[in-house]
Amino acid sequence: MLNKTISSSALKKLIWDRELSALPWWKAWLIKSVRICYVVARDLLDGQLTLRAMSLVYTTLLALVPLLAVSFSVLKGFGVHNQIEPMLLKFLSPLGDRGIEITSRIIGFVDNIKAGVLGTLGLALLIYTVISLIQKIESAFNYTWRVKRSRPFAQRFSDYLSIILIGPVLIFTALGITATLTSTALVQKLVAVELFGSVLQTVSHLLPYLLIITAFTFFYILVPNKKVQLTSALIGGSAAGILWEVTGWGFASFVAKSTKYTAIYSGFAILIMFMLWVYLSWLILLVGANIAYYHQHPESLTPERRSLRLSNRLKEKLSLLVMFMVGQNHYHNRPEWSLEDLAQQLRVPADILEPIIESLENKRILVSTAAEPPTLLPGRPLDTTEIKEVLDAVRTANEVRNANLNDLPAELVVDQVINDLDQAIAKHLRGLTVKEFALAEPSTVNLVSQTSERQKASFDESH
Image (tube, helix red, strand yellow):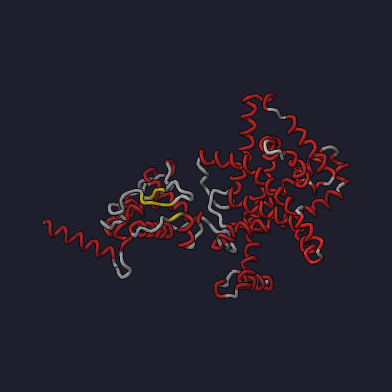
């Protein structure tokens, strides 16, 4: 037991207690990669990723045929609708012969969908089913990225419609360009040269990986309601793309040896294999999103799961830091802060800072713009907003009707202490505005005392 404790302590010191900025780049990259693998494995064992992947399997079963039907209708206008079946076959290739059977049945369902037969209500339900799938995907990605706010309804509708209508066209256009380039006369001549031929053959083998990595990367950039850096999305997409291809090989081997399951489940074996592969695909997609998140937010890489419960002191300091930084940028005509930029500047995860900003917004001390991503502006003049109001915003946040201060039992001694504390804070901070606070020079050691002295002098002059 002692040896195990010592080895665990040594491992923690080796991986978690080292400052990466002081290490060579390759060693820092290696340690950061180990940290990401550790926290992703921890999140998988936690069960939320697997739960959301299972939820997406159920939604996929409901929405797959309508989604393909809508894509089929769009692609038919471009004359490339016949490419849906080969792509579906590629996706279901790990299922072997069962994949071919499932593909033919799904395509048969798609062919049976006709707008005239469905009617207006049926067509509306079909589109709603497709939109609900994309909404469920966005919800899963927002959870991975610790985003609590969904897109506004109008933006959500336009974005979803763009994905449904334009997405298939872009995919098949990319595939068509790739096929055209590989069949040109110049490429054929280069293939005849031994050196270029071996290189192009290697590229052709890597092309499926590149296409799936590209698809995953753009998925990670477009779907979350958050600004995702291209580098982080590419790293997550690369990890997920390679994992997807490797898992496909392993699953194909499993299916080839699963004759016993066919004997047990009979006709249901095909459905079970299909659902299992869809589940693994969604899980891999969410794991890649998790990797992208941790790469973009290294401050979240901690050996233990970070608790989102902050002490009152931390809440108060964060609220003052936020107002200080927003006020400085406001008065010096600098760009507005976004939640993401503030979190990086303060070196705290965005999901920890978000409730603080929500408390300030609820009191109209801050407001969010309609930009993408939203930026923060003063909700009222900062020269009349006192620091005590900022502190009160976070001190009184989340007070609900059934747990309100006034509903607690009245005890004279306790109430007197609370009142004395409130009065002491009010007296000490009286007259100190956010403007004075934000524009204070670093040499100003006791801003509160100076403000009190100015107020006292002003009072004496008036009397």
